[in-house]
Image (tube, rainbow, N blue to C red):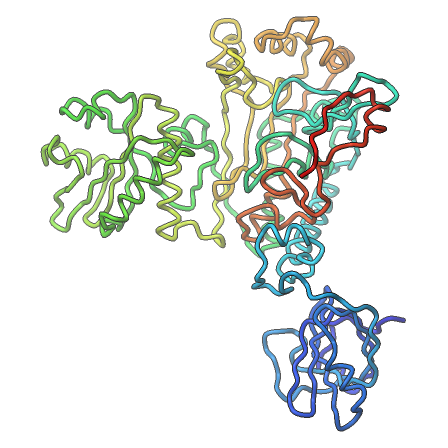
Length: 587
């Protein structure tokens, strides 16, 4: 056999045992007549000792080992004289008796260590080497444990794991589809699923009652740190349920994952925050509630005093950063530049310090009396030493989103966004529709199969923009980790929804006739939820990007730089698919 033990399992109790290890050479150190080789595999690192006095030829061979050589070593376990408390195998070492080089290695393009010298692009190009690093491998181990716990929990709740197809029809709503041309049906295309939404609803019509799937989904949209063109969902659906049933069950799953994987016991029910409050007080439908700094609206106080920026604004709002009055003018100017960046788009920022004597000193003092500034201070319940930051604009929603970015930045600067602190909540009562300037029509905020709140159904005929949805998102530390809704199970209500979204009856039948027809055969009330597995793992691992918890991720341009994909097709393949494309020459 290649090995009797892994490089992470031997302990002092194994002293005197003859063993064989196999793995990669982490490093080689020569000290006098001895050579020390650290051998690494997935399970850990073990130190191996080669003694020149005992076997000069063996020691000479060890001296010529390079980093990442694949080796097989046989020897005897001994107590280590200079112990290493930083690794589990630090009490022992292997006194080498035989060395077999299984494979040599070129010098790797970056060091295979936690604190590597490789940049993101280089590590993505050689991802198979990056995955050898302990910190990256641990993320994949955490991902594995999470999927196992998810399956264990849902199986205990009566769910069936059922696979749905990867090749489906294209849907007109939501993000852009990735499309797949059909060779056997030329001129026609499959789409890769953005989610198994309609299929899991059909499973409810089929009587499966409780379904789940850990499934790949695909969306052709612009990327960022928490978004990839392909991602993994924990996709779930249940029959004969209301919103509370789903929230309670999946809140239970979240608590189970926290306990089993992070050792965190969450006993209190997660707060539920209406979408309207989330936008009013945090400017975001995924508020980070690890810290305060709720928005305070100031139109009644700050308008009408001759400061044109505020007098002409539709919205004036601010945040109070406790104890931040020490910020220098340079720091405040940097904050101003931060909110003026194109990604945020504010035109400027007003600040005010509450001084030790309780007076307020602001950047717009010449427009406001101390009496008005004291009213502003009282609105924030600000104390001496606090810093007030204010934004305004002619679009209330847009300005709140800008203020949200400022709030998050202040939370970061003041150390309030601790990755080891978890604040969980549900955002509920989302709007059913949102206006699209691009489409010049109402669009479904979630998807067209979301059920409106029963009390708002009459508004579908009179004021559809005011209709709220039976939809809910779970938010942890400002990250939407999952969301779902109660679904429409009545074909007439579903037809009404398509009408509001601008579908003709013919187009609705063409796109979704299979679902509407299925509803005619006794669809049960049903609803569900999908968790983002990548986001859950990155949250538990304390990562800033989901890339490091995915084995082979894409970069921010949607490219796999390791496989050099996407890439042009050969003309022969294009001809088989009846596609005519001008292929640009590869640089």
